[in-house]
Structures are given as C-alpha cells and as structure tokens.
Length: 332
Image (tube, rainbow, N blue to C red):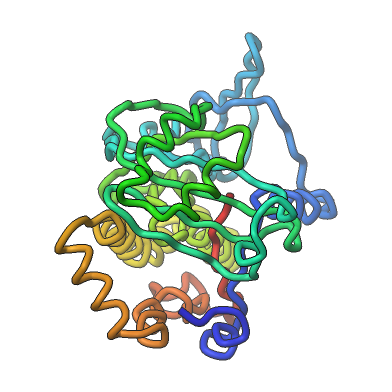
C-alpha cells in the first residue's frame, strides 16, 4: 500500500508512525507553554458530583483525598475507564483471546530491509507481526499479536520470549520473521479487550474521549488517531459554546459516535482477516494481490480523508471550523 509521498498527495497529509513517548513529549510541551494549564501527576479521579456551577471532583493521591472544582470533566482514562462506569455504562470489557507483544530494537541490530521507512506487515495462522522505524529511524518498533487464552487485565505485563515464539511456529512462519522476534531482550504484553459501541458517553458537564468512549482493537492502528480527532472536535464545540458546557459536550458526542463505531467495526473485521489460515488465507492473499496497493489504500480513504467538521452534527453556534491534518497512528 503506497504511503509516504503518495499518501500525502492522496490524503493531504503524510502518514506518520510516531513513538508514543515522542507524542507525549509534544503534548506535554504544548500544555506547559499554556498559562491556563496545570498538570498534576499521581492523582486518580474517584468520583464527581454535578451542581449548578459545574462539578466537584474527588481526587485520591495515595491515601489522601482532595476535592477539585471545575466547569467540565473529560475522561481520557482508557479501556478500564472509571468514569465510563460512573456515567452509566457498566459493561465489562471482553477478552478477545489475543495478546499483543510489544518491544523495540536498535535499528543497527536488524537487517537493512527492516530499516526501510515503511510499515511491514506479516500475516499468519492465528497471529500477525508488524514492524516499522520510529525515533527518526534509530529504533524499530515491533508488535506481534497472537492467539492466547491467558487473560491478563491491566495496562501491561512482561512476557517470556518462549511463549511468544510458540505462537509463531517455524512450521508455518518465515524464518526471517522469527529471527526478528528473537532479537528483543524484553517484551511487554497487553491482553486485547473490546466493548460494543456505547450509547451514552456522558452526562451534564462530563464526557469521555479516546478508548474510554470507544475502545479500539489495534488492527487498524487507529486508537490514538481517533482520540486525537475526538480532542479536536471537542475543543471546537467547547469554544463555540462556552456558556453551555453540557450542550457542547452532547453535540461533540453526537458528532463522533457514528465515525468511531465504524472504525471499531472495521478494526474487528481486520483482526479476523489477518489471522486466517489454510484455504481461507490462500484466497485472502490472492485477493490482496489482485486488488493491488492503490485499491487497498482506497478502501481506507474514509479514515484518512477525514476533515474536522465534515459529517458532524450541526454546530452549537455559528463558527468557522479549522482544518486538522490526518495522522496515521501506529503507536508503540
């Protein structure tokens, strides 16, 4: 699939592979330069109470509790969101019997073909492997996803290389792919979970963004991309309606619900396609060759051609919409 300059010409913005640490650093730098933003770490929102003048939030720092007051609360607390349950959705994320294994390798330690500025994707029986350079080409990010019946709730864990290699058997996997998987000294693991599209994202001056609102399986690399889109749309509606925060939040939710649900569904379908075996995989491969890279990328124009303001609910108040570059978001 043509990316790079071809993607920039096709979609009006480059397709970027960004290391999560680099993205965090850019966001922190932008926040630190803004006089109205304070960043507090080591604090967990436990609960909130809505009242006439906004809301009061209960925050826990270790064993101590404190109260913070504000005009809005935006939950960006991910798959295991505390606020998602608090606003009325108590569905428990469902384990999808797959584990993501993630690591990084110094580019100097891999063959030259693996250092190319491209995303390389390998498909196999009940597993797939993706790798690409980050950090200006100095590091190779590696993500391997394999079938796994061992559920591990939480954000991340440590995995043994022997367990990973069991999912990439030499009987069915390329030696070159297996050699790459043997290089990292350490692996972090994430069990993959999913939730159906939510009917309610918030209440009053409270809403959700990112995986808290629409958890994404990683088969389209759009989890961070959808969160960035959420933030841009939410910011615009808040700016348009500063005197009615609840109305701005409901309009944002309505604007984002259909698109994020569509991306969730497409990610699930890709997961099934990637991990086929035997005859089904054979015909999948033939079909991909016949379709070709140009038509394959065209299938995702609806994702990458998105512009802020297009296909959204009517604005709360009349105001111009600013453009937002498209960002491919395969994040290590």
